[in-house]
Length: 317
Image 1 (spheres, rainbow, N blue to C red):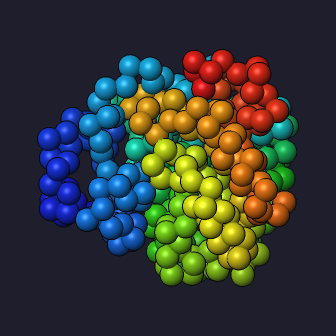
Image 2: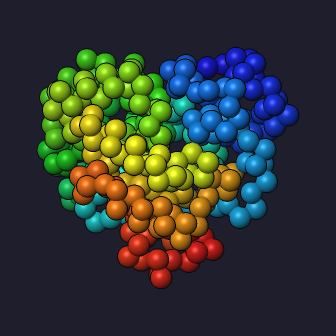
């Protein structure tokens, strides 16, 4: 959706739009915007996608809040866990979430790997002995079907399990076509991990995209991010998790917000998050309860907040 239409709905954003957009692009799909209440300045969906003056003054934020750089043996590859390798297929997204932990990518860098870089990433993953490869980004569904399928085919049979981590089924559900779903189903096991933070993101279009995947036999899980002013409320989280399970989607992770530069206004303390999580867990079954995790900046990978709170450097979390 274009800047004029967004500013027409929220003229108060004009003063800081250009500066925020230069730091991290402001892009919103028409589908997602149709679920926003533009008259509500506290709207939890709008807060995720519209720029804020708070982005411009965040002295405590980090450029690499999850320690990916130290775990990147090659461009476009992150290898934190012995049995899993992550490949970034692109830096492009259909919609740019303002809390994105990769929002500090240098805009002058290429948005996509070269053919040689992608071939090298695939070769690394194949010889790594990994059980799973995670295709991420950016959004891996921002690339063409052919490229996505070619990468999956090139990884097999060396890599038994593939995951596609994408927000597109939520932000641009029309991207989930019959052709895409057939291609993923024919290459099973391929798991789809979507990203939905608030129950109002689950529109009829999104429901249809999820149905297409699930009916084809593509397992779907969800990862959400705990965000101040968006879903830092137990009733919202309960509604989200139950709504997902009713649609056949397993709530997988609830991420503690990463302290990326420009997203400090979304931050909660781990203690605040744990209080919410304890309340959530009392209300939900095991099936509907996600893991509450944090990905600290030392690059060790995701850890359970509850179990490891004492070992966290809270100044960085």
